[in-house]
Length: 134
Length: 467
Image (cartoon, rainbow over the protein chains, first blue to last red):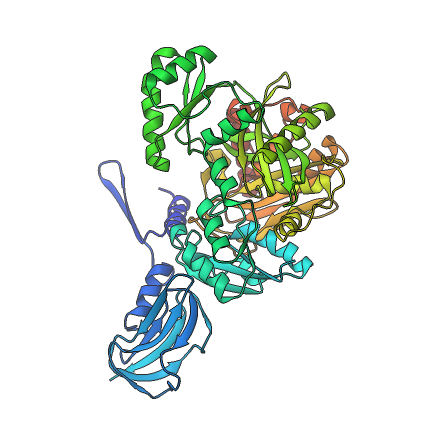
């Protein structure tokens, strides 16, 4: 196999979102291609990582993002940076055309960033809060 | 007129719609998937919101998310573009119920025209010529076979809810009918969740000629003439032109009057296209109606001097059509080539990837409708069209020469495109003479491959010699 052909395969893998590919060329020859994670991150994967605790930034905080689209309202008026919050507490709501989504915190902790305003338009994956874990 | 609209689409058509809105002073809201966050239309729109991941069913087909953005941003109307939700009657209906103007026809028109056999029945009732065949859907093999015998083989078995050639079977001989009928039903069920089919006469090597109409909400319907769309591959149009070299002024009048009659039969408003099959004797038959803006609408704009998106916006806002005539006569000749990220030397296999170098052609009467730019990533998640190159000339020959020159000036590096294919077609004697039909690509395909590969070899040899 020529270098150019392998390069083309890499491009096709990247374009189609494959991380690795094994090819059998005849009975004995096998070729295995793997894409470097630094070059390729599937957007969906990225999003999931944001929702979970993001190891690469810090283990002490989580980001709360919206997976719905609509208008944001705070659950209580005077929510401020530094406020103590409990696991399961509703911080706000996203109101779409046919739904009302509650934004809950998945840990006990302290709010370290409020990235949204009352009445702000929230789109898919939008950062809403950062919470320092207790 | 509207002060703010949402564009429920992506790519070049979103760019196209934004351009007209900017000129008219209408604010635009774009919606995009995670794969399109760096798209040109996202940057051009006044506001842009992410509505989901790359998968179309989670983003561009996600009706609650799209309507939620329209609601949250106080949009008055929604332009659906083409593809995605543009011919989804539920989307049109829900949009209206939520208080937005749908920039397109009434949802009932979309619904009726979307069901091919219903549309066919309606056209028969309105005296619009259709291909001989069954009046509506047929349930049994026996019933279908009787109709096939009456109209004579070859016949086509087509899916009632079909499109794009799916659920369609060509039957040459009577003994194959039963098998093909069942296959068509199975494919129709799998593709459209509707196994109903109908039978019509198959025409060998017809031309595909369509008529653009625009209708307001006051009962006025205007024809903007025809488009010739016979250069296709597997039912995908590749080159379109207006007018058609096969259409005389008398035939144009007849086809336009028929298209207007078809539109009036369903109280149609907004832009629509009636597709006809045209035989070599000038007989034409209704094929289907597309209840939206077409990809190839720019060739009509170039010869009629009307901005179709502007007309769509105006009639959707309740204005009357500005034309004083029912049939707009074409001025000069326009032609469009669809530049796709496909390798014509490899059976048009899609070649998504990053555009490393991008240089568009220019000069008088050359128009490029595209969402591409240098470093743009053509995603594998969506269709492979990179650009539409449209040129105008005083006559067909001048238009073809201008297209040929523009194609050679167009530089897209990093991905394979269909530009070499178009260059080949522009100088093909059958194409130049105007004497071609829908079998043109199949008939000449081997010759294309040989020539394209020959040119590639020459280029490689020249590069080696230079390097």
